[in-house]
Amino acid sequence: MADDATIRSGRCHCGAVRFEAALDDDLASIRRCTCSYCRMRGAVVAMARPGGVRILQGAEALTTYRFHTGAAQHFFCSRCGVYTHHQRRSDPNVHAVNVACLDGVSPFDFPEVPVMDGVNHTNDTGQPTRRAGTLRFVPAE
Image (cartoon, rainbow, N blue to C red; front, side):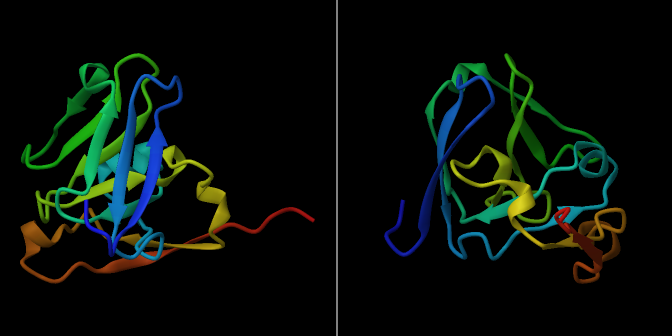
């Protein structure tokens, strides 16, 4: 992995799967998505550079899920069921990483998370990706 990226370590809940992710913009690329799968999954993701996810342990424990066009490949641990990352539909060379799996990071660390319009996916509409809104976390006092 390249030296100009931020390298973050991560794992699934049970620890069977361990990985490293090379994030060009570190956590500045966080987002959520409104597509049917992401809406149900509810994860906040950060973008890894092309080829930027390296499985260090547990490749045999990873399983995948594909839907709709089958272009995106969603990876999760077959033991604990936690979604770790996915290969993006809009650019199959880029992976999105579940920030909750990154060591020392929580999706609640971010006061605002951009939400992208995955229902009207750019590959279906031919239009640039549209921001659907913003998810806000306001801690209780």
